[in-house]
Length: 115
Image (cartoon, rainbow, N blue to C red; front, side):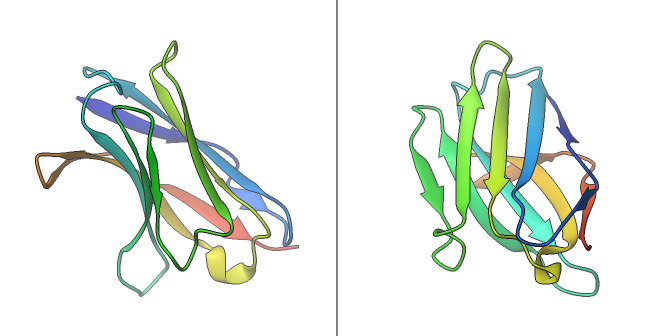
């Protein structure tokens, strides 16, 4: 199983950050697919997930700004984070959650929020 994040590395404040995770070796109609981020020097932060059914779950602290969707024809799932600030600067990972284990991770993509 491989996951690969893609999207812009630089986003301006107040804009919407959009990242795509392309999955190979497994179908996104199985398991749960999550977004996790890590600011420099800080711990991992779980942002949200989309289930095999298409149901979505979000961190309460980010729920008002976060949307996760999917394109099953491309086996991709997408993160959108609106109204970004410099505090959203982080490495963003897409990760599979399978039977309570985060077993496959993308390599991560750096997103910087700056004008």
